[in-house]
Each structure stands twice: as C-alpha cells, then as structure tokens.
Length: 88
Image (cartoon, rainbow, N blue to C red):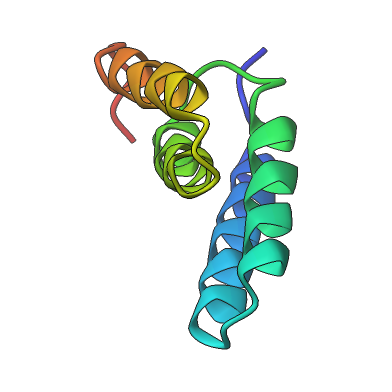
C-alpha cells in the first residue's frame, strides 16, 4: 500500500530521533529508533524514507560484526533506491 503523508512523517521522525540519540552518544537508542522507523516503513511501498532507513541499519550490523546482515541491508537500500517513484 502507498504511504500517506502522515506515515512518511512518522518515518522521518524516527530518522531524526536516531540522529539525536547518535549525537548524544546513545548508540543502542539510535539503533532502536532506526529499527522502529524501518519496521514501520516496510509496511508500505518503497519510499525515499525507507531507502534512507536501510543505511544506518547496515552500519549498525557492520559495527556488531554481522557483515553478511549489513551487506543484506545495504543491498536492500540499493534495490529500494532503484525503484521508480511518482514525482511529488
């Protein structure tokens, strides 16, 4: 299903919360915010917000030495980014 404007706002809010936690040095909280946003956005058709959420998850798994999982999410980001979306 397509995401509504309100759904995209939720995704962007989790992304900003991730940044706040990250810059405050709360690594696990930032990962939690990213997982929440990613899990929420995956219920909809791919969006720029979903593509943006895959990147930090990939980095998180890289830090935890789960390199194959990190690569999986990096590939998902690339795949989601290549899907044509309507303008606007």
